[in-house]
Length: 219
Figure 1 (cartoon, rainbow, N blue to C red):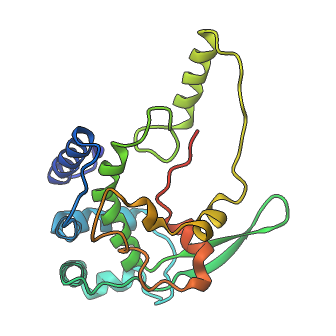
Figure 2: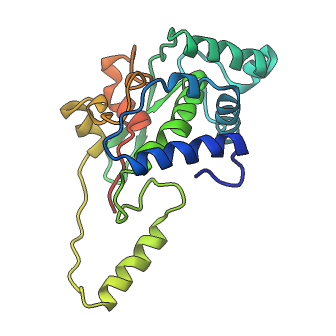
């Protein structure tokens, strides 16, 4: 699990979580807050968010503000909020970008604090959910890409499976949020299900789905 830039302690945790999830398909994980609030997890999450840059959210805080405040101090404050379970995400700042068909696609910009917390959650939760995904899913998975999917399709055609079904899900992120709350899919975990959702404005549901949906696309 992880990649060559992931600290060894973080990789060790991810490997252990993935192995447990893979070995016990019905196992439900509890008490994950202590792992998400770990110093090494949050530091790596911050480094990833920092490398991605990005605009500030509704609070206006950017990375320069955090560095002026002190990164270690800022991360310690976030860790404390997570450990005490007082952390609540801020509303998402909505922006719209034009689509090729002339319509507008809503996007949500989370605060840096929320992005770091979500990235930390992803570092801990991704190995658990990864263990449940079937091998034919390539999209939105670490270490997989569209080129690998194309190679598998070519091999299937070569082995005598010439039929291809081309399908797309219209407005997936806009529709899935309205039909089912993402916590319905969190049967594998407990206590963290609402970590990135509590306190979000319902008026920003579409942007929230775009920014936070953990569901993989099947390709």
